[in-house]
Length: 155
Image (cartoon, rainbow, N blue to C red; front, side, top):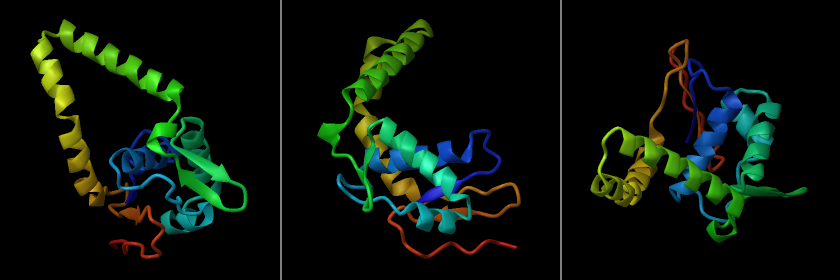
């Protein structure tokens, strides 16, 4: 599920990008699975196709997907993920761990936190159906698998 929150300060393309990252990382989207076409997703979310294209370009730049001209975009296999991206994430994790240590977290707490990551990934997969209201109290939701059903908007 892709959910747009119009009250969020992040641009829409970043929200779409983060939603696909979450779906890919949690396993909701399998390696080599085709992402919805730009036109289909833009129609489902009622947004400009250029916004979807920008989100897909960022996902490709970060190594989460790749595109095949004339065929679409596909999820990258986990082993094929960019080494550069993994290093970036490891550096962010180290920075967060250092900050937690500064705030008094123990080594045992940090280890326990990292060991809980698979539990959180499974919870995120189950929670992917959650909807977020936009500024009008309406919800824009599209199925990441490209289903043509769109949740009706509340009046």
